[in-house]
Length: 339
Image (cartoon, rainbow, N blue to C red; front, side):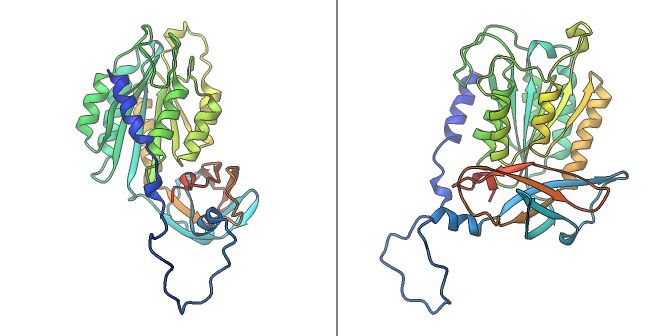
């Protein structure tokens, strides 16, 4: 039933987004205007649209003493494909509405650490969520299940987190159409959360992934999951939490892929092992970053709407470490620009 609930929700999320675009007036031509002549319309309507839209980049800045909260527009530069861009807006966005997706690994390997995840995740949302914020909860194992849709109620989220259970049985049918009978569908979960839940949301968007990084059986790949998050302008934080006993003291292999998933989207990986205190500290670190984020906006000098990936590089003062997404896709509908 949970899979059916998620499928229904995602069908709604995939509804056409034409309402978000301006349509021409149904009447005749507008009356003559005394305004100054406008640039000649060469027929590339989407290019003109990009010219008036901004690419938004959320980022945080640290040095050896911690997060920096006193930067101004002239302190940082933005490069797109190595070309310097003109920064139009530069603000600190700690009060901007926040949309959070919690992705909870409920595969068999998490059987001994799930209670830690449930407790710390609920406390994190209780501390972070304000009335203007929203959160949703997805669990993933051999299925991808929506446990809680958008809500700003920490109490509702806690009930949903507490209801999560380890699932190692045969698949009852993934919402992705995946018919494989086992595995941990991590990439499917990331893709669905980013593409079907976050892409049409405005403002700051983050995914917090609680997992040991193990992946098996997804229809989606690391590349497609990362791309979906980049197109949604969603930052991914991966909290690596692993029950070493489950692996018999061996090494689990999800670290490198999780590092790429996080850093490519402007987030990072925090490895907590199976230590509850380190898990709480990891959530505290994420809170600190959310409170110290900046938003820099620019209109790209490359006005082509060709769907290509544009690399981004932010620089500030010497000795400062920038945490930001590595690029965006030049999409005709501007969904990847979070406009």
